[in-house]
Length: 112
Image (cartoon, rainbow, N blue to C red):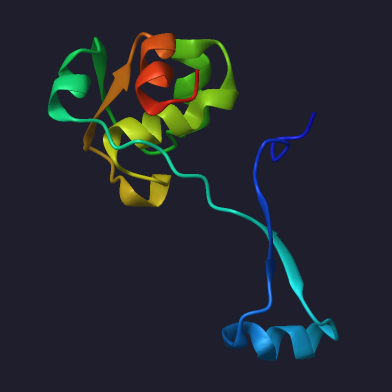
Protein backbone atom coordinates (compact mmCIF):
# COMPACT_ATOMS: atom_id res chain seq x y z
CA UNK A 1 0.00 0.00 0.00
CA UNK A 2 1.48 3.36 -1.05
CA UNK A 3 1.83 6.44 1.11
CA UNK A 4 -1.02 8.23 -0.71
CA UNK A 5 -3.48 5.32 -0.49
CA UNK A 6 -5.90 7.11 1.84
CA UNK A 7 -5.56 10.61 0.35
CA UNK A 8 -8.33 12.16 -1.71
CA UNK A 9 -7.65 12.61 -5.40
CA UNK A 10 -8.78 15.88 -6.97
CA UNK A 11 -9.26 16.94 -10.57
CA UNK A 12 -7.95 20.45 -11.07
CA UNK A 13 -9.43 22.33 -13.98
CA UNK A 14 -8.84 25.78 -12.48
CA UNK A 15 -8.13 28.69 -14.81
CA UNK A 16 -5.09 29.45 -12.66
CA UNK A 17 -3.39 26.31 -14.00
CA UNK A 18 -4.39 26.79 -17.62
CA UNK A 19 -0.78 27.63 -18.56
CA UNK A 20 0.42 24.38 -16.99
CA UNK A 21 -2.24 22.26 -18.70
CA UNK A 22 -1.34 23.87 -22.01
CA UNK A 23 2.36 23.23 -21.41
CA UNK A 24 1.61 19.57 -20.59
CA UNK A 25 -0.95 19.29 -23.41
CA UNK A 26 -3.70 18.05 -21.05
CA UNK A 27 -7.24 19.22 -20.24
CA UNK A 28 -7.07 18.58 -16.51
CA UNK A 29 -4.53 17.88 -13.77
CA UNK A 30 -5.09 15.10 -11.26
CA UNK A 31 -3.50 15.70 -7.88
CA UNK A 32 -3.71 14.60 -4.25
CA UNK A 33 -5.55 16.72 -1.70
CA UNK A 34 -3.52 18.28 1.08
CA UNK A 35 -4.33 16.41 4.28
CA UNK A 36 -5.79 18.42 7.14
CA UNK A 37 -4.57 17.79 10.66
CA UNK A 38 -5.84 19.03 13.96
CA UNK A 39 -3.88 21.88 15.54
CA UNK A 40 -3.37 20.86 19.15
CA UNK A 41 -4.68 23.06 21.93
CA UNK A 42 -2.37 24.10 24.75
CA UNK A 43 -4.08 21.56 27.01
CA UNK A 44 -3.52 18.79 24.45
CA UNK A 45 0.14 19.75 24.02
CA UNK A 46 0.67 19.78 27.78
CA UNK A 47 -0.91 16.33 28.07
CA UNK A 48 1.95 14.79 26.08
CA UNK A 49 5.27 13.91 27.63
CA UNK A 50 8.08 15.28 25.50
CA UNK A 51 11.83 15.15 25.18
CA UNK A 52 13.66 18.36 24.35
CA UNK A 53 16.12 18.16 21.47
CA UNK A 54 18.60 20.85 20.43
CA UNK A 55 18.79 20.90 16.65
CA UNK A 56 22.30 20.43 15.31
CA UNK A 57 23.74 20.57 11.82
CA UNK A 58 22.84 17.35 10.01
CA UNK A 59 19.69 16.58 12.03
CA UNK A 60 16.64 15.33 10.16
CA UNK A 61 13.10 14.64 11.30
CA UNK A 62 13.22 11.11 9.93
CA UNK A 63 16.34 10.33 12.00
CA UNK A 64 14.66 11.58 15.17
CA UNK A 65 11.52 9.60 14.34
CA UNK A 66 13.59 6.45 13.98
CA UNK A 67 15.38 7.14 17.26
CA UNK A 68 12.18 7.78 19.26
CA UNK A 69 9.54 5.76 17.37
CA UNK A 70 11.67 3.05 15.76
CA UNK A 71 10.28 4.10 12.38
CA UNK A 72 11.08 6.91 9.95
CA UNK A 73 7.41 6.92 8.89
CA UNK A 74 6.35 9.25 11.71
CA UNK A 75 8.78 12.12 11.05
CA UNK A 76 5.77 14.36 10.40
CA UNK A 77 4.53 13.94 14.01
CA UNK A 78 7.62 15.79 15.23
CA UNK A 79 7.16 18.47 12.55
CA UNK A 80 3.44 18.81 13.41
CA UNK A 81 4.01 19.02 17.15
CA UNK A 82 6.57 21.79 16.77
CA UNK A 83 4.62 23.68 14.09
CA UNK A 84 7.62 23.54 11.77
CA UNK A 85 6.59 21.69 8.63
CA UNK A 86 10.05 21.24 7.19
CA UNK A 87 13.61 21.12 8.39
CA UNK A 88 14.39 24.39 6.63
CA UNK A 89 12.32 26.06 9.36
CA UNK A 90 14.82 25.03 12.04
CA UNK A 91 18.30 26.42 12.65
CA UNK A 92 21.14 24.78 14.55
CA UNK A 93 20.73 25.61 18.23
CA UNK A 94 16.91 25.74 18.09
CA UNK A 95 15.09 23.62 20.65
CA UNK A 96 12.30 21.33 19.51
CA UNK A 97 10.15 18.94 21.53
CA UNK A 98 9.58 15.33 20.62
CA UNK A 99 6.32 13.74 21.81
CA UNK A 100 7.36 10.50 23.50
CA UNK A 101 4.02 8.70 23.34
CA UNK A 102 3.38 8.26 19.63
CA UNK A 103 -0.05 6.70 20.10
CA UNK A 104 -1.24 9.63 22.23
CA UNK A 105 0.10 12.13 19.68
CA UNK A 106 -1.67 10.31 16.84
CA UNK A 107 -4.89 10.25 18.86
CA UNK A 108 -4.73 14.03 19.30
CA UNK A 109 -4.01 14.57 15.61
CA UNK A 110 -6.84 12.25 14.68
CA UNK A 111 -4.62 9.74 12.90
CA UNK A 112 -5.22 6.75 15.14
